[in-house]
Image (cartoon, rainbow, N blue to C red; front, side, top):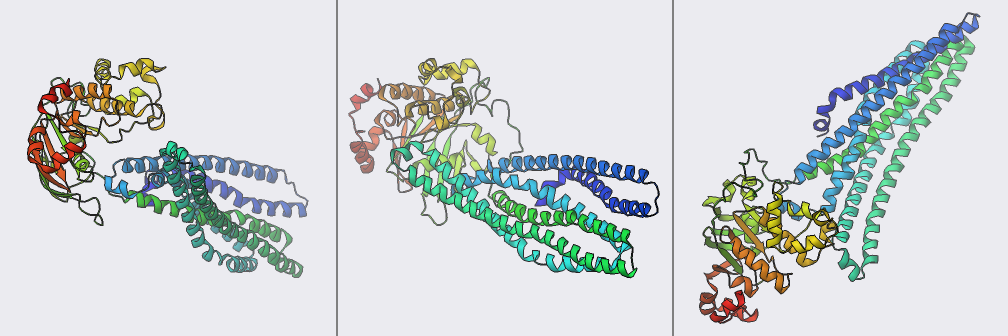
Length: 586
């Protein structure tokens, strides 16, 4: 998976690695220049050119490494950006069951925190490992040419101490993964708290929520501290190995100089190479540590990318299909049919639908009623293909929804959820969310139809007024009207309203009821409702009980023929006299 992220940037990574290697190579020559300098001083020769050469090498190496570091860091940021784009694109196409099983905060953490760790593995684990290894090999070659005996002493000490790192690296990966999981838990807890902020305050639960978030933060801290502990141990091993090697080489080398087996200039050059080994060995250790850290992040990203997604559409939408509003000629209303539909949300949960059958012709209003848990709202989820039926068929215009291009199917539908969500942003952005191509005239008409024009006049910045997080600056009824206006502005062929007027006062409900009745003349309207004003206006009513369709008919027919509907009507004051319907509708 790592190669998939870096493959588009391999040329830039290669360039950065080459520049870093050039800088390291310039450093490799410096001990040899120092050796020549000492030798010339011993015979009283001029050292001016050697000093100039040494200075030039230092400057050239520094410049090459600086440019290489910039190229690599820029490339690392590009890798992170590409990973975030890819992950976000996939998460936004997740199937609803995958979203239901996931925690939103944890998914957000994978896009933010986990992708950030990809930067380290891109620059350090790959380039640092490559350049560090090349530099280490080069230094060892020069050391072998200078003093093979002293090289043997050095390698023996470094291998002896460095072998302990094989035990340290897996611990770094384990600690990092636990830390990242805890960061995801923090995001999940915060998302839960701010998503119900008023409920938290009204319940006096601030301290409990604070304790839950603090517990996750402490777990992240513990994981980070564990990783830092093992990383520090790994890095300190490098310094310890070089220091012990220095003492060993100094003792053995001093003895060899005293015996005449080597000269002082060679010993000095060898010691310089020994200290030079700190950098490439440190790079290799850092690369290994970064790989352990990054691999934990990549594993979490892979888990997110492994979640089931909806198919990516390849067929382009025709003009008017995507935006809904602004079509030259109104499209005919859509017809809906359920044929023996069975469905359950998860294999471990009981079925929601047990062979649901009904037909809704194009146009008019159809109301779904029944006890809580009867499967009414699930009908809408299956029509929108948020979920796939386990058995039977869901038909739109006589075609199974599974045979519709998904984007084209949803372009025909306006949907108002039960809780009428409003997104952060301005009022205009929320209204035009489903119909970004709507004109100002179309927007003005919908505002009037949904009685939002008065709200717009009262707001300090009109349509450009921010509505707050989840529409916190709007009342419940205003949020419902915004959601309904958003759906109507799309001018859909099928309008799904799930308890869309539950939070409206009597005056606004009456206005919106007339708006929905008007829409039903040109659009197929399906509504889940319990209120008399909505149900009695429906052309047909589908009574559902325990995941089955119990009866279909008008209000008057069902009151007379179906005991369950009669009971519901009596309980919810739906059973009014036929003469009263005109009064109720007026």
